[in-house]
Image 1 (cartoon, rainbow, N blue to C red):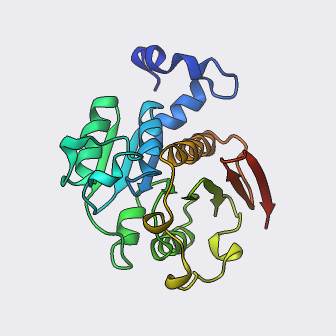
Image 2: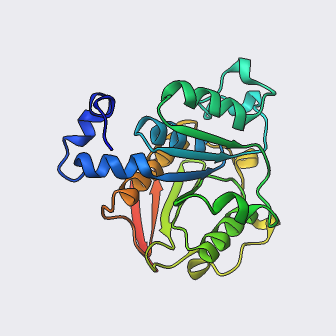
Amino acid sequence: MITINDYLRYGKPMLLPEVGENGQLKLKNAKVLVIGAGGLGCPILQYLTASGVGTLGLVDFDKVALHNLHRQILYTENSIESSKAITAKTVLDTLNPHIEVHAFEEKLTLENAERILIDFDVIVDGCDNFATRYLVNDTCVKLGKPLVYGSILKFEGQMAVFNNKGSKNLRDLFPQPPNPEDVPNCSVNGVLGTLPGIIGTMMAHETLKLIMDLPTLENELVFFNTLNWSYIKLKF
């Protein structure tokens, strides 16, 4: 049920007719898992936490490094060499102590993916490699979980919602992952620090809409170029 504290904390979004008490209750009862607590994962986790998603999980096996700090805004220099998963949980617990945050300090693999994903309603993919993206996608298809997907590079980002109420999944768009040697990455090509904030916030926005049964992307891949603010929506 919605409490007095909920009204005080989430009163502004609840004023929206599309949200209201029923929408906020859906958020409160939702269980969302975020894969990756890096550039995309940080804003996703912050906004889902602040918005009152009742149960939030995060998966990351990495440690904080100095070169992360320009874009991974859950961390400070005091976090360097600490676990991203544990550090993120500590910050999120402070941001909103009224929700449950579960940290999975492990690498997502074929052996543990189903065990980790099965208890969550919505999966949000903020990872940084194709092997994990396809593993997350395939596990969501097997378990019947909707998947909010995003990726970034340089000034560009993309976003989609897969496997939601019978919609298509990543393999319907790209049947096989590319060869690893053909894949550009931020370590070589760079990324402007604000880009993951932009795309991650949009992914969080789409996740909230999905939970509240508001219109979301359906069989559409959206491309954003933040250098010149061009926008393309591809139907598939």
